[in-house]
Image (cartoon, rainbow, N blue to C red; front, side):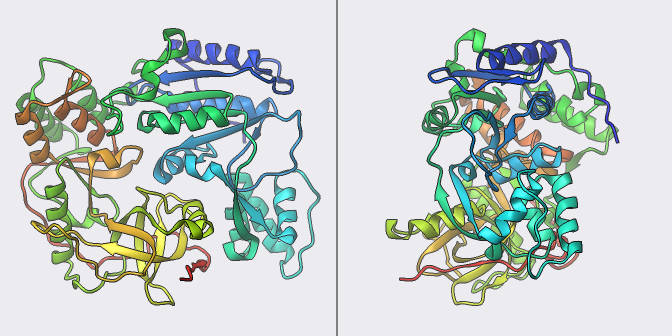
Length: 507
């Protein structure tokens, strides 16, 4: 079935032409679909910047499709076929699992920045399936796999372009076909980086080492990384290398959430005026809700967004209390946030295993129950391409007015987690949810403090980021209250997946 190509706005079309010109200079001609081998020493960095709704994702998707049609190979981190000196490659990356999954849902085969640094080692028998699905080999005959199973894998791959997902559709587990992970040794070619406002200088330098041709997509109105003094990596690029998009496409869709976000750019709008605007919008459109309490039912899948850590901790403990969660254990369905990996250097392979399967710092995770071994947890990593994993876990539940967190259970080493019913707005960058609750009293506190960041009132930057995390409905919570749950926590809404791989650390 053919699809109608979207009509680009004037600024998008100009950016598309400028990027096409740069690609042509490095041997990728989109107009005539002509590719020439990469040239040594030729490099470039450009940025496409614009606020929410300006069409950055649409432009990224159109460029991806044009590159694919021209014959450029897309490197996803799932599997890489035979390397050719003359081949041209593209990798589309995002800082978080959630940000990558948002792109994949729009048909763009994105993966995380971390995942592209490591490549899976496939069992040779099942690598034949990967080669066939990628058009680099004949349809194989695999002992134990029926014709129907291979057909399911092929159908899945045509829609999702994921090798692990296709093999899972054939009934295989990750432990069947992936035997380990190895650090990428060779540089890549062309890199698209979404949510580039989240990058710090070190990550930016690493990406420039990997990709001779690098294109950043970012929102200058978001919050800069905490160690960047309010600056974003694309701020230092020369003017000709920065392409700006204005708000066009989603404005026409009459989106009240984006209307509120863009109203924050008016220097005459203070906090009280903005709240009146939110209330008026809520009276006229059910996509914005003036909420007198936090809806606890939403917190299991979409964390409440706050500014202050103290607020985050109070809301987390309120969530656990209304669900009757005991201090000594977690309930199935409780949300967690990965806070890093606590492993010594000698267990580097185990660290790679965990990180490659999506357990990177900031990953949103749902607890599915204890693993088969003491200290292990069965987990669903939200937004990961292969979401089910069982890993040695250290879970920390922070308590109000207590310096040390309570640890209901823990392995000696492994992935560490904080509770995920509420998160700071900083940590929410790069993620989106259908329904988002913003805790407005925290933003009022920021407004009263009068703090600024990069010349903009801090509360406005916080509000902008928080509001634009909402895809469908925004809840502006104005009271420090929490509703009772309408039912127990659940896990049946999570997509079924193969039996997870146990990742054990021997000490």
